[in-house]
Length: 513
Image 1 (cartoon, rainbow, N blue to C red):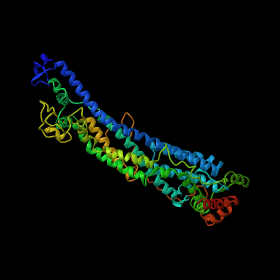
Image 2: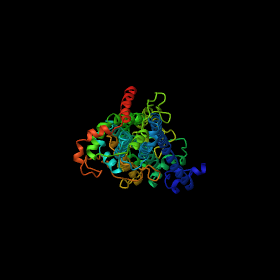
Image 3: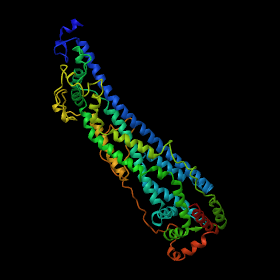
Image 4: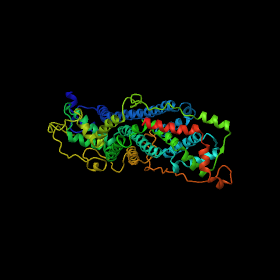
């Protein structure tokens, strides 16, 4: 050791001042070790946050998917008990509804408003046949019937309310889950640091050059460490502003999930709401039929034998009853949305300013610096003494005055710039989701995971309205002559069984309520 200390440091590239006990080979090994230590320090702090977002995404995703499964099972069980064979003969209509809701959540190209409008139109066609079993309806006639869904409101106000609730809740749920995944992936990419040659020199000088001077136990001064880390993490610092805005947007949508956009409160009673709509149609079937006959024409009457058979086949089960509270699933994935949101809100608040705090958090580690004590007994880059330079600001532009790391502020890291853009795009989508507007899906697969930059959010304008077209689709040219008798013909055409069904369902609805 004594002979080594007697060597001048002229052969070293970085640790060259004064005498040294390091060879050129040792300095190179220390250089590689300094890069390794720096990467580990960044990854160690980032992994905790990345794992948090990853685990919360999995929990939310599992919860939402299981919630949909529970809602579908609840509706199926309830409708089998309520409507029996009649429901089972038309169950594909309700299965299709849940297939589309699931497809929307996982990123399918589904327009929620149009899909729900189509569901109610198809349900009206099925119901219209059931409440008018004495008539024969062609596909063209039923297409005309479906145009009256908006105007006549045969299902009461349920479709309008449910469409608003489902759209807002599903948009918020899907966008929030995507936000968690985007945060996870951004951290993964940004924390994969690769210091520049200038950064590597600064890291070596700070971490291991004192070893070459025999000052193995002397740790870097805190502000010295701070400047080195600010220089090496200059581009990461530029992520902080967009990251904080993104965190705030996630918190806003989280509040919506707790309140008016709570998908759990929408999906849990969806079976009861749809049943309410069906019963409303039953109660108002005569008035609805009369107006449809006026607009679409008088349909052809079936032969008497076929009418009796049709009425028998379309009889509803009289076993309707709601679930008892203990029968209805109240949670999914072993938790509730409120508990999930409360937990993640605290994590989101803690994640703010992560990138601007990263240099300081690394230097707070006792392995990296002496801390804020013993400022005169630390390595300042050249000797064991006080560090006199001021700490530079955060971000790339501030490094023009960094005394420890030479940073080219004209060449930003493009990987990080893409992550900034990914956060900006996601923030726009969160803001739209907060307002209840549908947003384009973001692919959160491993291939993209926030890497691709994109433009702002495009809202889907999807509010089609049905036009009232009083067109004759039965081919009867004397429609005007028959219109005056439509009301009477409708009443006479309804069988006693259909009338009894209407009264029965009204009584059951009041009893149930």
